[in-house]
Picture 1: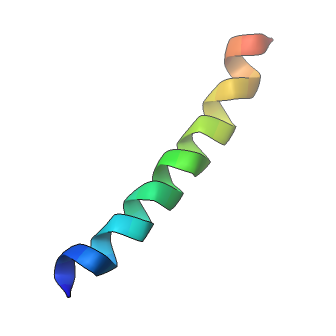
Picture 2: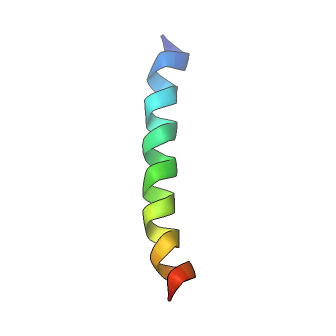
Length: 27
C-alpha cells in the first residue's frame, strides 16, 4: 500500500518539477 501510494505522488512531483524547470530552460 505504501509503494502504490508513493508512486503517483512521485510522478506528480516529477511533472510539477518539469513544468517549473521547462520555462526557465527555454527562456
